[in-house]
Amino acid sequence: MTSSPNSAGHRARLRDRWRRAGSAGFPDYELLELLLTQAVPRRDTKPLAKALLTRFGSLKGVLDASGPELESVPQVGPAVSFFFSVLRGTMERYFESEARKTDLLNSPEAVIRYCRASLEGLKNEVFDVIFVSTKNRVVGRERLSEGTIDQAAVYPRRVVASALAANAASLIFVHNHPSGDPTPSAEDKQLTRRLEEAAQTVG
Image (spheres, rainbow, N blue to C red):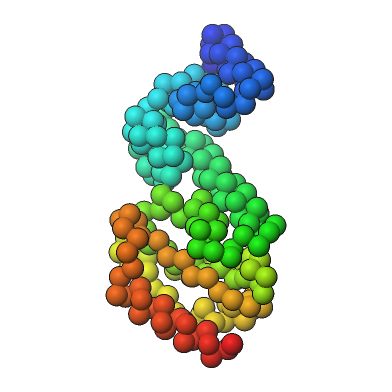
């Protein structure tokens, strides 16, 4: 399907508004519409933007959606889901790069800011380890496990081996709860103790 003169003109006007004022004055559906023009070059993207917002409730909901979830919306194909996958990965890299510039990981709040882009919206539990230097600078990060919605398998031996390979001075462990309740379970606490003991064996 090719774009009509009207839709081509509308795209041009959206882009001109962005060049002049950035996101100011853009409702979510227009911002999403503008993003979609990068993945759908020859079709009016306004109906698609509105359909995605209706399905997922918000711009954040659209960005958090998985590929299969996105493609369950009519007119959304692999090109659109791939585009959003790349966009989300770019956002994650941006926040990680910002954190690497400074000693941001010196408080729980800083860790949350660093990890938010890569953990928010995940449907399964994951367990990550962040390797940091003596000055709390990030020197590496690894996803140790991705499990079902209620469990993730983590092996202390693998954690210690990865820490030694990264030449890390300290470790930060990050684990999400897709349920939305951050209260640590008894299993979470037990795993934390096991990891602490394993890390102490190598200083």
